Length: 192
Image 1 (cartoon, rainbow, N blue to C red):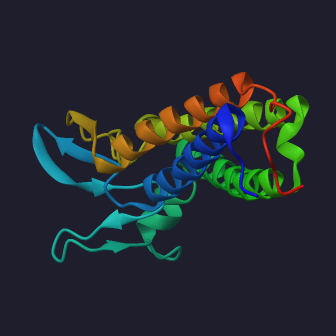
Image 2: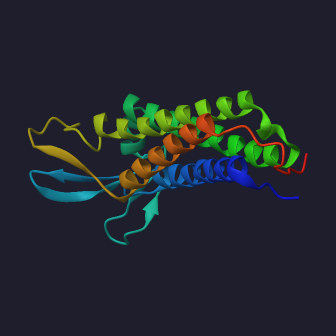
């Protein structure tokens, strides 16, 4: 039998939000339009945490590690490294979490308050790690004057940043719902 009642519904919604948060977090970290770079008010390109948008073809590409930009800045900037590491950790934790959560619904593990609380906490961890994607705004490149030219360099949040914000909201709500999800009633049927 499939889950029914308030417990099964709330648990399913929370797990679905966890899954959506993971998908959006992954998209935000791999989209080449996380930030828009402006130099002296003029748009100079779109940058992601991992990818850069080509100005000529408007396609995303990964910088070659042997490229001077790649070796000097792109792969050595501490803020970008932290953003990449946190997004990888968030996406890995979230993926395994929602897979286990769906399995927990089938085997009856979702009946345990401790089980739900652990995954509620993990959802909040994923929200915090996804929030660290915004460390790209503290990077020396693309959001700083790396070459010390005296130009005014600023970054604005683009589509990838919006995806990250929505992902954080999904993770947060998934955590809340998993933590407040009521225990199942005796008449609620489960697979396990």
